[in-house]
Length: 181
Image 1 (spheres, helix red, strand yellow):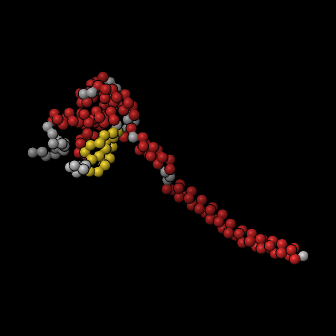
Image 2 (cartoon, one colour):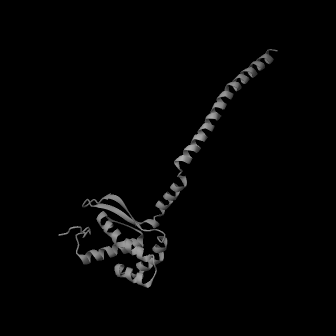
Image 3 (cartoon, helix red, strand yellow):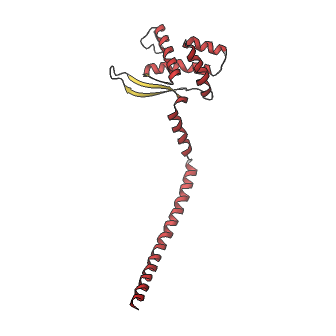
């Protein structure tokens, strides 16, 4: 019986699954974003996030532990050299899964899995969003005071407009009187 076992076997034997996840993790670390099925992406997230956490401490022991999972020396070096310093302040959640639709052949649900701190487009969007945020109380008070000032200006403009038209009418009458004389 499989009571309480939540691990997805992905339709593969243990050795095949371990090799596939290792290769996918190496590709993710190397390219920072890969496209795969949702089931594989969820399994990969569980596989790669502890390795990224392990890479935060750069010691011989942690390098050997990560190498036992990834089996590629260049990828382990890139993980410790490039990825670990960027995610050092993050307490977890190093990957993001973005669903992209369904595959044409077998209708499998596809997605992109990426490292969060390496997507420049999303980082610029969040930075721009942070600069425009305002608190409700401060924004409402500022907005209310600015609208009352604008209302007062509009009222002053409307009151001054008839006076200016009266003056222009008087000026027009004066000019007609001068022409007659």
